[in-house]
Every structure is written in structure tokens, then in C-alpha cells.
Length: 286
Image (tube, rainbow, N blue to C red; front, side, top):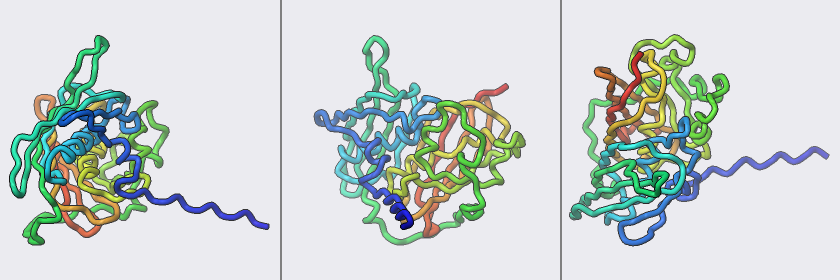
């Protein structure tokens, strides 16, 4: 008798996924939240900036009267490490359609002193209350079908410690922006690809905060290597994404003095621009 085929793994859902569990904060007292930063969202042992943005976004979503991040600006002060952290929030202003708050994430040094890792200022509202009126000249990025793009699993073995976050993402990159992986960078500051979570969880406003900082740095395609740490990142969430994979396009127009900007657009399966961001990052020259 033939062996029964194994049942396909169930897709994770919003609210019940690894991303939700790893970004969940625990209320200690009003305005103070505890979290254990997961090592699953690291790149060479440093916690990814988009994951951190989602963590603070979740804390502010609990602390403020409105549910959805509309705009969130973060300054990355020191590199975060996996392990215990505390988030402190403060309500700055509440109104009928928007509320504004700030939050900081702290960890502890070897002497047990608190070290601030990241500080954000954000305004929240209700995406479902926005009018359905779109007037735009923006167009979705031209990315080949997902089966013609390439992910980390299609390349050589990753550097030890660098693949933790890649294991949690569905990331398929446009071959036109992958010259760096073949030792032939184009010189253009571009990175494009399909994005999702590996367990199949659909996108929501908080995972969009991860999406804007999850692709390889544009510096790679400009012929530069090494860590590209974020100094400041501002993300705008424009609408609640439709189910299905996202398309992310990132461009850099100017690298000067060891710093570059990255402008990101995130598009959903309904061809809507659901998130935008700009960040300033430091690069290693020479």
C-alpha cells in the first residue's frame, strides 16, 4: 500500500505567525514594554532595522488610541543584539484622526546600564477610514515573474551567521539588480524583488515596516561591500496591503561623504503603492 502523502504545511495568518510572536511586546506597566529580541531576524548577528521598527511599531500601536502606523521615523543610535530589551513609549498628542507618540528601545551593557538603541517618533491613524481616492503618477516596478527571480537559496552557501533573517523571508530578487552576487555589479544603486514572509503570512501595516528594510543594500550593486548600517529611516504606510506577495523597489541617487540615501516603494498584489520609505545609511569606502 503506497505511503500517504504528507499534508501541506498550513499558511501562517496575521496574528498567528513567527513574525507576530517575535515582535510581540509584553506590557510591564503603562508605557513600558518588555521583549526578547529574536536572533531569527539578524544579519551577521546584528538585529535587522526593519524588524526593530516593527517591534517599536507594535508597542506604539498598543499605547496609542489609533491602530495603524501612518508615518514612523527612527534614529538608530547603537546596534541592537538578540536578547532582552525594554521599550518605553510616550503619548505626545491625540486627536480625532491621528495620534502621535514616541518610543525608545533599550538594552543593557556588561555593567547592567541601559543603552538606548533606537528612538522613534510616529503618527498613527486608522487605515480603514481613509477615502478611496487615488491620484498618482507612480507606477509599479517592472520585476520579472517570481519564478524568474532568485533568492538566497539559489546562491552559494551564505556566510556563517548571515542567513538567519533570510530563512524567515520569501525573497526573490530581480536578476537585473543581482550583478553584485556574480562579482559584476552594474554600478547603479538599485535593488528590486518580490517579498513575503516564508511561512506564508500575508502582509499588514507592521510587516510593511520590515519590508522597507529587508532587501540587500543598494550599495552592493554600486560595487561596495560590507555592512551598511542605517542612521535614520522614515516609513509611510499608505494603505492596508492586499493578500499576496509584495514588490519592493529601492533606489539610491547620491552617495557622498560615506553616506547614501535609499528610497523604497512597496507595492501589493492589487498594484497599489502601500508603503514608502527613505533612509540615510553609512557605507564603508575603500
